[in-house]
Image 1 (tube, rainbow, N blue to C red):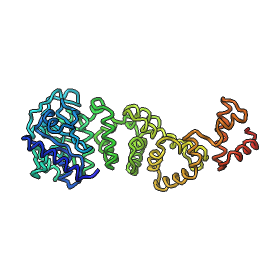
Image 2 (image 1 turned 135 degrees about the vertical axis):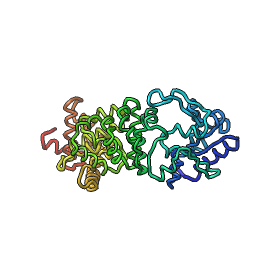
Image 3 (image 1 turned 90 degrees about the vertical axis):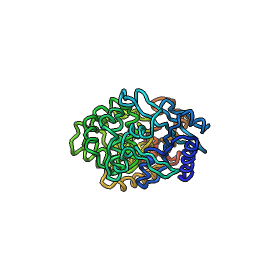
Length: 403
């Protein structure tokens, strides 16, 4: 995605709104990244215009959260979230406000946001930052602080505690004392108040930004880790540190595979259910568990082929490599082995064996248990001896009195 057209389109939205008599700014994370000198395509827009007014000015808009003042404006295939300045009433369940007001000023809108570094606005037409919460000062001081009372902000939305840890590590900040103390006091409420999908998304963002290891250390220090992953409560400090070091070495992007590094086999199914993982993520965990159990230096080739044929095996192998002394050597060795066994791996994946049901039935073998056993034995013999010819494999089966 090219940055220039995105910035041009975003500026066009702000210009259109301002020319129609409304206040309109870039908001939140983009402003923070801009002040840090980081390029960002993630541009959200805040405005005094109400949703119906935004949709009148931009006919191709999508109403995605009108009750919260949110409209998605589409321009040439790109979408921008445009939100009306708002103030929130009391939060009822640690997730959402009981009601909101769309008759708020930019300052009121800023003060209902989470952290000072995320509470600033930027006018791209006049190149001016609007900072009502001292966010710029905190960025310069490298401080992470909530806007207003930390306990109030965390009670409003418990996910903010996990976000705090992510921001702290992504931007190399120090948590302001009262903010950190509020996390210590309130973190036990996260799991009960926040959907597991939202928690998993935050953990995934930590991994994608390369800070999962440092975030785990912070979550351990404040106690949040043991609420998210109760199976770690009784883990020894030695085992926990070894697991964390493996996470530190893991450089790939599968969170499900990464979580296997801190989760013993017996607890993985519970983790998958708790966080409502997708079938792809569950497959990565299953593959990791199978590799962990069966991948030995002198494992038979037919078993290796079946392991390599598992869905999401690459993610699992990359995570398992992080537990080894020389991860790169481990991955390289298994890539070479996968190439060597590709003929047989493909058979397992497609269920089209060199000697399959069709061939054995032609020899008078009826459907049933023996037919399945013959297919398995023929595959193992073919793979372990490197036989790729049907007739030669049949001859071997007769010679060994298997057929």
